[in-house]
Image (cartoon, rainbow, N blue to C red; front, top):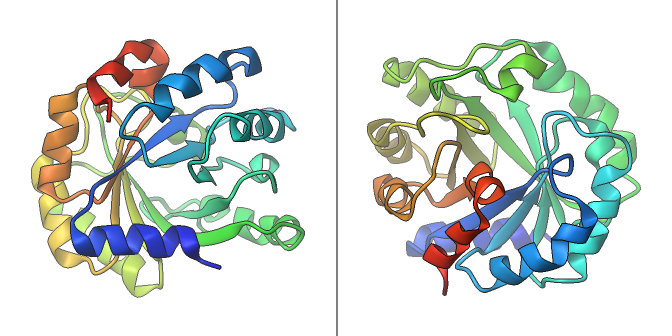
Length: 241
């Protein structure tokens, strides 16, 4: 039990950087999976996240089942709603949108998810999720009806992240949003990391290997990339093992 989290925690303590590829079930067709996973498996990716802001019923279950056929990497749900929960995955980020004040995404959806989670063997990882302004309105902002945090208000971001840790979140996730024009500022990442004792995840707006390296260097323990691979799978070639 708790193998996924323990491995992330150990990597963070040892300075081993992790990369998760985010696959959106509404953007990835099942026939595309085999070729996509071939490139992914040859890359430095260590984890696969599956989820999206708006995903139709049962789509996630079918997609995860297909992904499982093509990789041994851990598959972790990154759900926007309870209909994305499937026992086919290995774990789930139990996301609480602590940057916003919409009770649906702070606790309500979590309560509704419990009955489903009880029927699974998923490793549940409590995660404090902060939406950071990446320069454009993202799907997360539209769906959750919450505003992203201003990147210039660094202390507020730090305090929000630390509050999440003190509430018992095992991971803190700074997210600029899918298709963000810019990723979370390196200064923000660095200062948040210095305040935390739990691993730090950063995602959104990372489009090049250099940006990835800079985000790692600034303190991210695990980086999530999704849109860059959706738009150009050749990006995997820059990240080969």
